[in-house]
Amino acid sequence: MDWGKIKAIFIIAFLILDVFLLTQLQVKREQYEVTSNNTATLAENLKADGVEYDELSEETVMDHYLSANTKTFTKEMFKDLKDQEIQLNDGTAIHSQLAKPFSLESFDESEALNEFVQENVVNGEQYAFWGYDEEDDSITYFQEVEEDKFIFMNQSAQLILHLNDDGAIVSYDQTMLDPIEPINGEEEEVISPSSAIGALYHRGALTDSKIVGKVKLGYYTLVNMEATQVLTPTWHVIVEKDGERMDMLVNAYEGKVIQGKPDKEKTLLE
Image 1 (cartoon, rainbow, N blue to C red):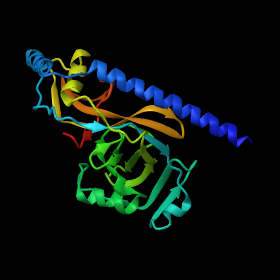
Image 2 (cartoon, rainbow, N blue to C red; image 1 turned 135 degrees about the vertical axis):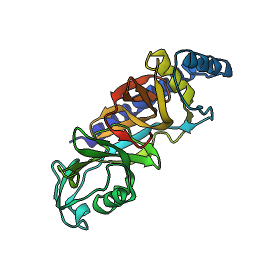
Image 3 (spheres, rainbow, N blue to C red; image 1 turned 45 degrees about the vertical axis):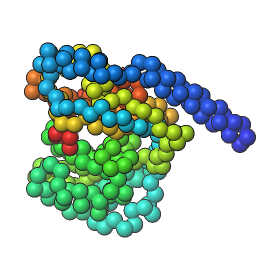
């Protein structure tokens, strides 16, 4: 195996990735220069279309792209966990069956639930409550990069707690990204929450709707190269329309709407 050639290929690949990311930043600068005038216009348009929302911050926020590797678990990591049977599968996703169901008083976030995760899951402190799914009888925790900054809807960075018919936790599935590091280490200004709302408005996603809770910044996968991912800063907006709630994501550099997902779960941000 020619390690020199392999090293050269990786260097070239990351140079290409750097050029791509710089291009995306330039697009962001050109398309999303927010002024007080267009902010006022957006507010007028939202009011005219019956959109309810709380006051949106215009504070400048800096962030950066992140590089994240899929974590490979080993048996050694689980030696201190008691009363559960661990299946490593391919090492990147684990399944745990509890010896005894863990009863819950409610399916909302609680101190008892968070303590269970921290005490019974490897690196449990790096996950935070996202929501309860009644249809699947499960509770989802997303991995956080730092406090209150989720990695949104990433199958490689989540914890799923499975419930029995009595509403007690009987097993869980876990994946994780680690390490997670800034790319180039330089922070760039992201678009404001009002610009994210503007992107959704121009997409036609907000007519006669209500924006629930705060607009929150986290991360979403921009590039997925199996073992390695590039995460981009992303605004999360919960939109309620006709009795249905949707999780809306907006790329915080480009201002592009990433997706809208029916919100079956009760989320932390309500």
